[in-house]
Length: 252
Image (cartoon, rainbow, N blue to C red; front, side, top):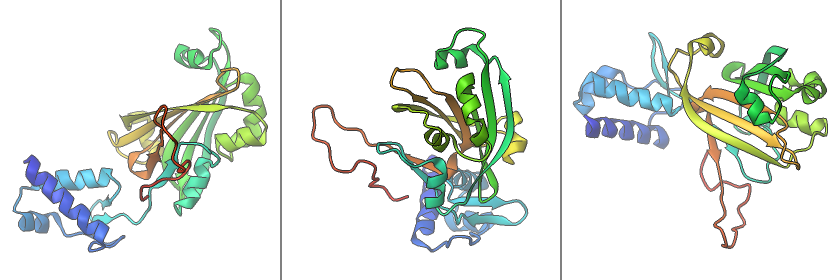
């Protein structure tokens, strides 16, 4: 089945990219695709599911499967890192938004305290918000802030993204660590992100570090995987750097 499944997927993908299946249009029904490719319904369903995960298709229950008409939000991760997530959403033609869920003072898990380099039983602020794209929930962001940092940023966190808030309040950092991992939507996240349990998600952990090596905060965003792409540019040790810093050679 693998070869047939890959063929169905690649042909439909090519038709989307060529414009044969235009953005917003409904693609042929499963029965028509089964007849055209002479494959099983399982093969067609698997191909369409993968293309939905890639963000190329969007299924509407009882209506059909449609070509997505949204662009991915591209996040270049190399210096000069000057734009916030909200800025990159605007560049993708998406209106950014936030919905604050909670801001609480608590003793977090030992793992959080270890990352933040804080003593056991330290109290920190936990801020939770939903990230919106055109008023649609696409991500859940949880940020842990040492008490002093949280008290400074409190006035901004409900209405702005974290990195611009740090800049505005003159909280300096020299580097940012990121960790990107695949995950799936949990039962606790299902209602907030309006997606079924098991939906493929992207986990993004981030920690700005100050000049003394102390983490300023720890953030963790879980988002629909098909909404984002990330670009990295790494110099070869001892080589001559190309003049492409901050620019991507890939199409969004």
